[in-house]
Image (cartoon, rainbow, N blue to C red; front, side):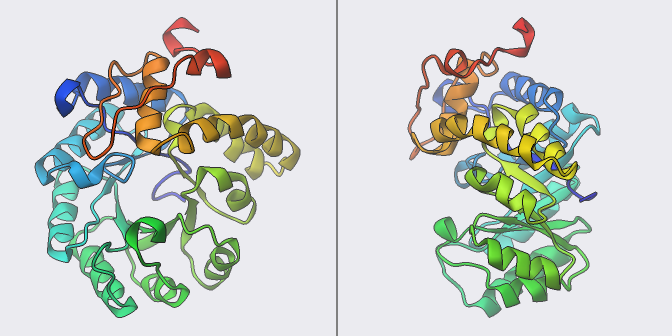
Length: 292
């Protein structure tokens, strides 16, 4: 838990018109997340539009977020690609940029064997001194990390955690019992069940919008107050539905942040299409922090 934090946000990447990276937007977003209680910021992951970011842009984002957080949160850099050599380069760039950890997705598109997954992950973990969070997301990668693969990877001294977007709670509990890996829920719809089963925290898309409420959920579960945790989760469900089910989570999260006045633009890069969520703040009772 100490490597990465508990209330992690899978950050969107703020962009201006035309898809240029927006430093002012990044500053406002980081400040909003820190004020809401996020203690880990995942930069350049799926929600951050990693497939459309150049290596230079990715390293620059990490550098900017590290500078803005001023040690208030762990900055975890998404470095996984389908190319092991490129993933290694990005891991080293992230370390040089000041990242506190790496998020390593299961290599996608190529659909390697489990032996290939192991070799890929070991190569990246060996490339830096940073702790590694594995990202198991078969819906995007095309393959899953098998339980035995996770157990073997847990033997590496720098592989510390798993962002689980597989949704198999029994498997998660089984791996938790066999390893020292910290599990993080990567499916907002299942945040409460994962925490109740022993997850160390969340890597949340909805946390872009409501980091304070995901922080409340984690606190309630840790205090053993499941009645309060259920109330928090039930209140969050309509927000999760709006952000995660009305369209791609990246586009919808940016649209919500625009409605709340945190980002000036909801721009995404193709093949994603810009979305809108009119009256989002009014519907769910949110206000921009500056007007609170």
